[in-house]
Picture (tube, rainbow, N blue to C red):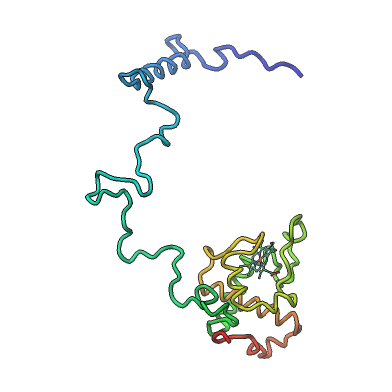
Length: 221
Ligand code: HEC
């Protein structure tokens, strides 16, 4: 290997009209700045950790600024914690204290299924395949555990609330889609997965002829 060419000043910093190099001038300015930043005791104030060392309040710390002497502030009235369970847990969490939702807690409408198809094709089909059977480019190329078929008997037997929770929080290697899909959208996806499962066991156009009523719906039971 040839050694790299030696750098000469004219290569790295073209001479300015006054004849001094730009690097020389920058160095001079830096030195003046550094000198200006020296405290009286000689300790340099300019450190590379100044973000970390800046004055700040730590959790549960004291404050002389706020009248109650505490650094931490109470959130404004009406603030909803990000992980708070709001509304009906059966709907928003896919289950309640009595257990996981066995059925989809929303009325099944053609609109809900259409929305579910739309979201499934965007958020789930990339890995689980458009037919939900696990046939996807991702699955073919995945070295680790492949995205499983969602129409196989084992997944067909899972309660609706379990599918909802997997879509929300993820499962093993699968990431959660709670932040990307609204509560209704997640149930819509679950409804569409159920439709794909039905189509898998009853192929052809039997679904189109109205056996959609076979889809589980209503409250848990
Ligand atoms: C980035 C790829 C990817 C996407 C996108 C994805 N999944 Fe998954 N999914 C996986 C993988 C991988 C597993 C298996 C995880 C494991 O076992 O560690 C899995 C597992 C599951 C399971 C559990 C199946 C079983 O065997 O018990 C369900 C249900 C599921 N996914 C539904 C969905 C739904 C609904 C969506 C869309 C909201 C979705 N997935 C989006 C990769 C994905």
